[in-house]
Length: 136
Image (cartoon, rainbow, N blue to C red; front, side):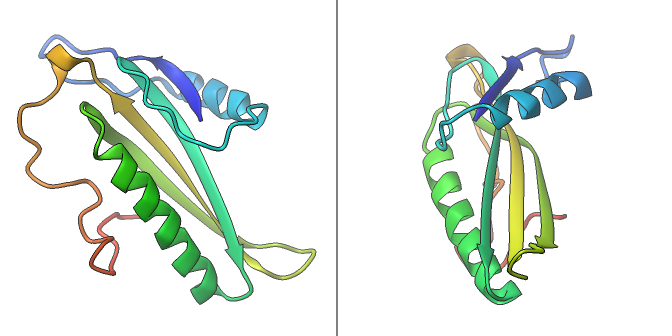
């Protein structure tokens, strides 16, 4: 986990995405972070990476679904949580030919006075039903 910056809003009160340089800086800081757990500091934008691997693509995907499920279960219980971006990378590890999957999640935890009153659908809708709702 790495804190990218504090939440910033445009003139209409919409949460703005941090600049690419701020996200790169957080990604770099995460490389030196020994913590493996996401944090949910109120009023901040966060960057979290989770990686898994398996002998087969199916095994790696199943492990990734479980990890994402745990993350979103925790995150969605936090007042003010809002997913901004999620990216997925998949590759093969040269040393053992295992399939690796990495997710990078950019999310915000808004202050109480900025929390939206109603979120029509969870950004993770579909994961618990066995199929992904996220576009990659």
